[in-house]
Length: 255
Image 1 (cartoon, rainbow, N blue to C red):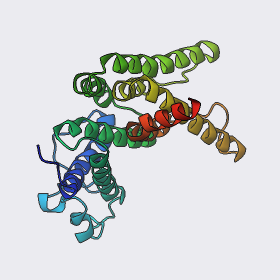
Image 2 (image 1 turned 180 degrees about the vertical axis):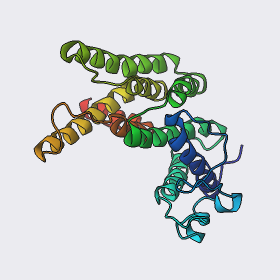
Image 3 (image 1 turned 120 degrees about the vertical axis):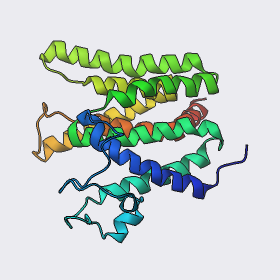
Image 4 (image 1 turned 90 degrees about the horizontal axis):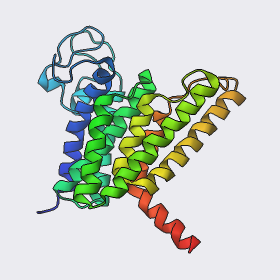
């Protein structure tokens, strides 16, 4: 099979990014991503297809609704561009054939989860549960590493579940959401146990530093909840591309 040209990956990423905007807005609110059609968040006017072309329509309308002329968030085209760039980058990092579909799904899922957790502190099951199955397919069926994928699920989901359960028993309040547990299990399915360990360590470090900064700046307390998925998902995306390289580098030094 011929390689997919970067330009086509970029265009495909723009289209997928437009769809991801719908997912980010609707999935955490338990709304259908199929219907009704997209509408202006301010006036509710239905958006015509020619006003829904990724990036170009936003530029043509100067970032405003055609009906009410109220400003539309620039996050919509930014998500589209980010998705397109991610797709091109993954096209350089993975075999550029049909098997790249699963890494593209993983990247899309991490982008959605980052923003839904940031906005509403919700990580949709409709992303993570199918993601666990697709991760098994990616690493097990295509890569032939079933055991590594299963161990990754157990390490990712199991470690966060134990952490949350221990915190609840000690403090009598939730310390780790179920969405974070399922997200870590999905990452484990895609990344395998070793890269998952690195991702969990790095995300915990980043979250801890952020929480410490909030306390020092008097913007929060030790009990202030932090959306862990905001750290876990982006670092998990980095782990997809660089996790095994970091491991190889470390083992080379240790050896």
